[in-house]
Length: 280
Image (cartoon, helix red, strand yellow):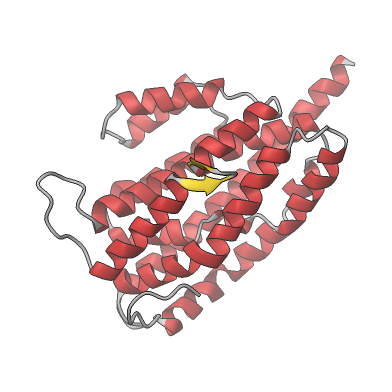
């Protein structure tokens, strides 16, 4: 575990949180989605929806950085010093990771992997442009409009709007809980193994995506996951602090949203498969 300073984890509160999340984590570990991806077309549908979860994860990260550090001019000290250090380390890894001898954000790596295997990125790029034009006005109405204007699927729309509902609270314990317990280590290693088998017959088309999954899961599990728990302790306090109750509720809602996203993607895969079969 990566340890910073003298942070003593709120072990009782975290254990209570993990117990609450255990049923949802069990669902995600064996979700039908992973076996539903049987072809390149299926994987394209998965990626075209999952990429929005990758993107709004970065938005949660920036929400934490805004609240825990000073990003204004003039600079003044802001936030607890250890939490400040932790979030800046996580930002460095997520926004400017070193992969294959180059610096790249995990979202950019994901988009590259989509392009390499023929997944559609037009909708995402249009959505990002629309969001950039909104500046800092990310009300639910504007998020909904941006999603619909770029034909984002209903499951991905619901997921993004749920994530931004956490950001819209402005409550640091809510944002931190959604970030800390909705990470990409929820994707089981089994799925990466299935993709490697699929990749053998595709001439390496999925190489970049496999690198993304392995790198992101590795970083989350070994570095950013432990850092996030330390950050939660700094934000929420000791085991009896009432902020933990809100954090636990938020974490549950975040994982529940992930289950619903996976459910929706499975249905999209089935629908598109039927269309392909009917056209043959």
